[in-house]
Amino acid sequence: MQQIIQHFTDDDLYKFTMCCAVIDNFPRTRVKYQFIDRNNSVYPAGFADELLRQIKMLENVRITSEEVEFLRRKCSYIPAWFLRYLQGFRYDSDWVKVRQDDEGHLSIWFEGAWSDTILLEVKVLAIVSELYYRMTGEEAMADYEAYYSGSWAKAERMIQAGCRFTDMGTRRRLSFKAQDVAVKAMKEADEALKGSGHFIGTSNVYFAMKYDLTPIGTMAHEFVSAIAGMYGPQMANHMAMKAWSNTYRGALGTFLYDTYGWRIFSLNFSEDYANMFKGLRVDSGDNFEQLNLICEKYRSLNIDPTTKQVIFSNGLNVDEAIEIQRYAEDKCIPSFGIGTHFTNDFPGIKPRNIVIKLLAVKITESWPFYCETCKLSEDHGKYTGRPEVVARFLAALNIEPRL
Image (cartoon, rainbow, N blue to C red; front, side, top):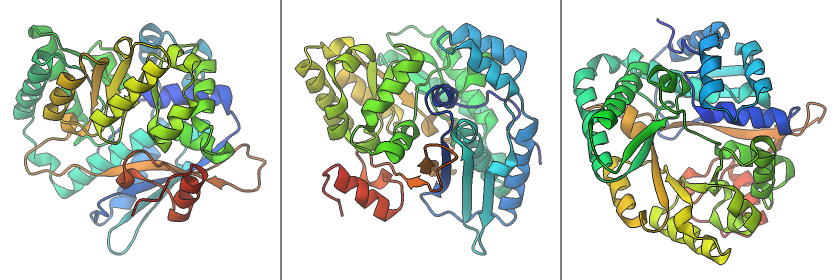
């Protein structure tokens, strides 16, 4: 079967920016990750063997001089030493373990240096997603001409509604081609249409380079989750903001706050960081309630929330984004990151509900044990981690468990 990931930058920007911050602040940390299929899907026979073959082929995927130059030109906040690091980076399939049981359920684990394994998540999820549709024959059903038209129509509605929006659909795309078609359609719609909205870019660095767009992204929950595993969840957001500002000096100033919910983040969100960070990203909970909490917090710090960006990325579709835009446009600077709805919205095809989450962490390789961690967020259904670990973190944060 053809190699699925053929470009080093066929990945989301946030993995590269987090990798840089990890090396800068936690260079000796080691981690474990685990794949989670929230639908407990049955995968085709032989899936694990082909997945391992695809992961092995990542060892031949290296960053090109064109990709380095693009990152240097478009992402000036990335230090030169990190671009040199990427030029020497090599994937190692030994970091990954894969198993498929007799019923067809899939298990995947990563273990190794955080600075190495952090660059596996998006690529492996994209492989799992596309490989599933190839092996089931569903990818062959896709009508890409119709998909271009549908993607254009989505962009047209959002542009006319005044939405500023980004593609964030790499991890659960139907295929590389599906994301390519969607990004191309939305860029061309943005160039052709007149409206107050704007397609501002894509999280996928390769497609940003191909279509001369801005790659968009900052961080993921794992950055805060790893710090919480090492030092405890109470001050993890504060330590994450401090580490992030140490590396980027005020650039990349959108903070993903909901790893342990709004309440504990709000206690950590002091006036200095509220002024430094350009805004916050809403990725769980009720979008309207979360926005109201954000605005109230800014006002309590004597900061005008209409000067701050709020990015909404909680599994949105076009209708939901437009509804939020109408509510939020006079309260903040809203924008939208949309994933699966842009890159895997084909008739008769069900998107994968898959994630890879940080499971455990240790501060240095010399520690004889790992400390388990978890993610709580504002949605009980998005809790990840062993139940006893989740319970321990809830107790540490004085949060009542939700049945």
